[in-house]
Image: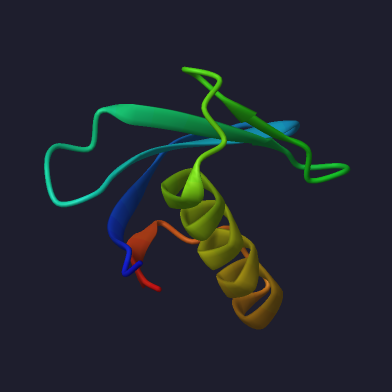
Length: 76
């Protein structure tokens, strides 16, 4: 199954970073990372393929760039 998604950082504090994300439609879902241990919380509780693909894309960019990405896309 092909997944195409977009994400955008909504807010970042000392402790958490929150993103809005979505597939081909509107970015109407939210996910949040605990910056200390990278724990993931999804607003609607669904940890589906789209959520996992976006989370892994964000974490990959964090590892490469050394900072939480402002936004981007994932094709998986």
